[in-house]
Length: 91
Image (cartoon, rainbow, N blue to C red):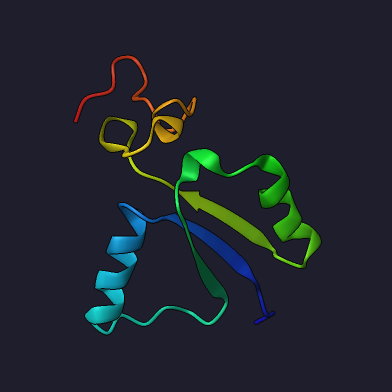
C-alpha cells in the first residue's frame, strides 16, 4: 500500500475536541493522517489549503463547526459548509 499524506485541519471549538476525545479513548489514528488544530475554520484561506498540496499532501480536509453552532462570525459566514438534503429526501 502506498504511503499517503492526508492533512486534516480541525477547528479548535468542535472538531478538535472530538479528536481529543478519540485520542483519550485510545482510538488508533492512521499514521498517514496529520491533524492540525486551527483557531477557526472560517479564517483558513484557500492558499493555505493549496499550500498543503504543494508541500506533498495527497489530500486535505477542513473540519469546522456547524454554522449554527460556530463560535466565530467568520465560521458562521462560510458559504456551503453544511450539505443540504435533496428535495424529497426523507430520513
